[in-house]
Image 1: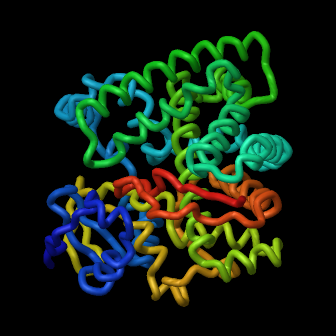
Image 2: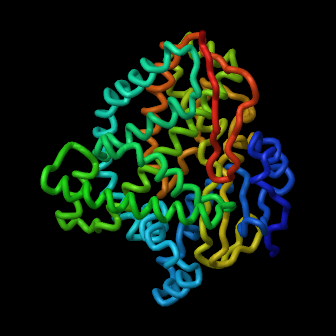
Image 3: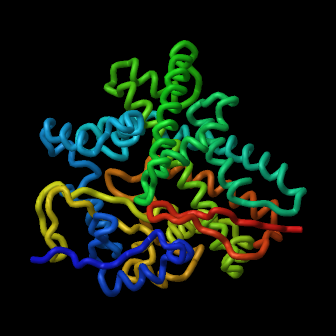
Length: 410
């Protein structure tokens, strides 16, 4: 039994950022499981393999709950967690990064606060925010979609959900951008410094907000989570901060990148755009296809929790397995006409929000935001088109999104 073969893989190359899918197709066909020395992980490319790992208890987001406490402390010292104390405290141990009983406990408590009813009740507010953005932009006849529409919407909505003070909302977007930058393998020491500052400032502000909600509860998520902490239901102060930080980061990235990637796909497929204009009942399936076709989250990883064999290859406890969601979502063994953009595709079991125990808690909010945004865009800007010139994608392997998307409709 062999280890996965080494393969040169350069996901931070500008050409890969422009269009990773030809590379993905070749990897799926030639080396569906391979090792990248540069990334320090074994990567999976095919849908069924990735889904199998996501549902297999021998793989997890952390080794901590199968590791003696002394070894955990030693590894954290070696990884120099003390260099980034706030980032490590709130980002490296949030709901996304935990397993076992701790994960189940926190997820259950957060799910009760982030209920379907609470999300449904946000629809009117989402529509109001979207209308306000369009009211300001429509008369100009053109816009840069990412900065003027895709970014403000989720910031507004996460702010509303958390109950963040109006005068402090401008800080959320930079905080989120600085924190998630460290998920990419090519981050720098300067990126680390920014992320640590952002985590520290967010935590300090949330402490102030939590104290305010204890004295004066409101209909927001922080009030609901504070009541869980104070009620003795085993959600700690650090878990409250980590959860809110995760909602900011994950919710923001999913909507911004999903909106930009999705609109670009629509504009590059005019027949599909016209089909959606004609039949708005396709909006729900169109959103799912946008997420499948050009996934906002392209890679996630799991640790191997015990020595094992997977698809004929040897994996050892502690190995890192990279799950190429973006590649899996174009797998022809899982999707008919996988390279085609089809807004009526059904079923559509894409991996854009993961699956299993770590399925994205913020998926319902992201879907709601995208549905309202695209429904309003179709109504308010029937002649929308690309301004011209090449579109620019940010270099990255974990998140895939546009730097800018210039549009016009005059």
